[in-house]
Length: 64
Image 1 (cartoon, rainbow, N blue to C red):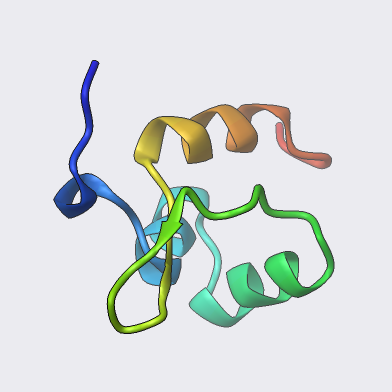
Image 2: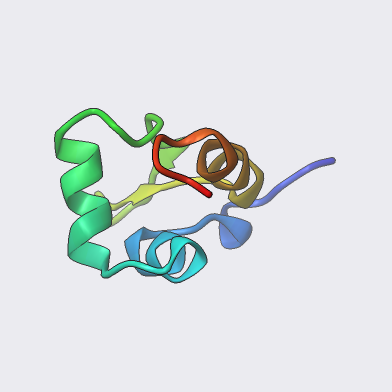
């Protein structure tokens, strides 16, 4: 499965996927609870591939 940078998620997409606000996702990253980004875009924004986030979301503490 090949993914392009256009497929990658930013904070708002991750937030929508797990049902929280984007600031919550930023807080997760600051506290080391989010996986490291797959890459940083040209604007300096971290990006994650959806499958990495889906896997993380299935395993994250408190996930039901």
